[in-house]
Length: 232
Image 1 (cartoon, rainbow, N blue to C red):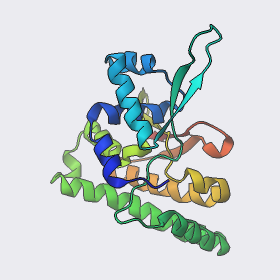
Image 2 (cartoon, rainbow, N blue to C red):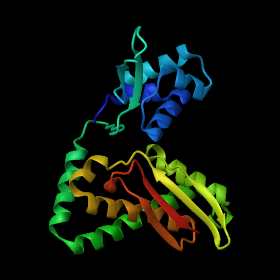
Image 3 (cartoon, helix red, strand yellow):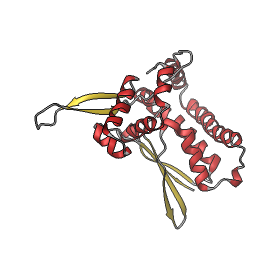
Image 4 (cartoon, rainbow, N blue to C red):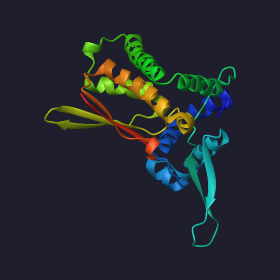
């Protein structure tokens, strides 16, 4: 979905409003004004204003829901699954992506192998460029620094890291709740997910000594999230 870039960036420039949008993307369920107000510790009128602004740029929906208790039905708000697509100037990148994926699919198994190598390299290069931009050295980064870099590069994709200590070392698991290729998965699931997973693995390999990179849950299997577990 394409949006007016200036209106979207203006709306999401408010830190609280952007946090509300990220939270709704993560949870993938409808919320009332009061639920948002309680979670973010703000007045319901302020929460309503933020939600109204988000509906105006078409990134969340608003529907009336009957309570069964009589009276005026309450509104429920939910983030749209397709997320945000901005373009300066407007370009039809989504259609171009569909063409590229269809072309790759025609080349069969060899295209999978080559595509995975390229996407792995892209993921690794992005992390290395981020570290260089911050004028840091990989050897000087703490575990927390590395997690922060991953979270920043993920942006609206939405990494949710969970760390567990084991006798063999640390295990990091994370979920992607707003897949940037959600639409393409419907038609080319195997190829799209293989390329995206290679890209993610490249990001992690650039920061950690990864011994295992395992997908635990997948949207391809009707799960709400794509969930990964990494032993580092």
